[in-house]
Length: 227
Image (cartoon, rainbow, N blue to C red; front, side, top):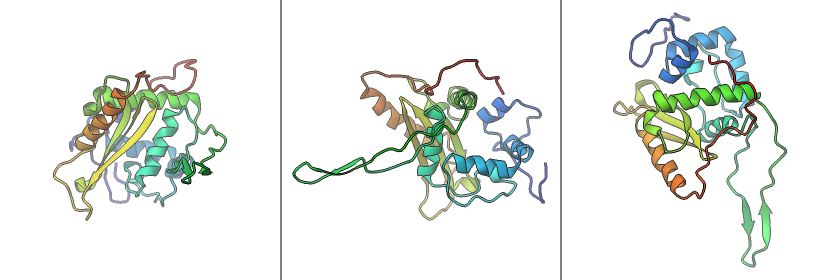
């Protein structure tokens, strides 16, 4: 596939022929991601990103689905939390409460009403795909004693490496890169970021009385078809 003189390539440089969407997701195949975005329309991809809470500028270019537009780590983490929460919109905030020296509450964050933005079938399908990434895909180094789900990301020339994941009713995101945007030495999202995420979440796991699995908070009626 060549789009305006640009041709997507997979990390390995190989083309695997026809694969299922699930296998492409698990292996993080760039070629399939680009083809899917072209089929469903780039503008629809951007509309979904906005619905998930991404506010930064997104360019509708052929490489859109590969994450070529910059997104803040906070907004990206919040977007994955939508899936972990069962499809409900998430508004990130940093201050829960402010008290004065006498213990009087000066401010308390009041969450708004919950808004469902993804259907149950979409949530279950995405959760299944994200779990597979950790079980047998590019994020195997993020495997935990509990069910975990997530996705790796690596930008061109190894300038950025990310892992976004959730488990134990918590979503966390890890970015690794140089502060001057210079390339790193073969650092991928499934390497250092996944291990940082695993180490952090393992400490969370040790501090929990009940190691509850982070299953999206929806009723598993009919299982969605495997893509």
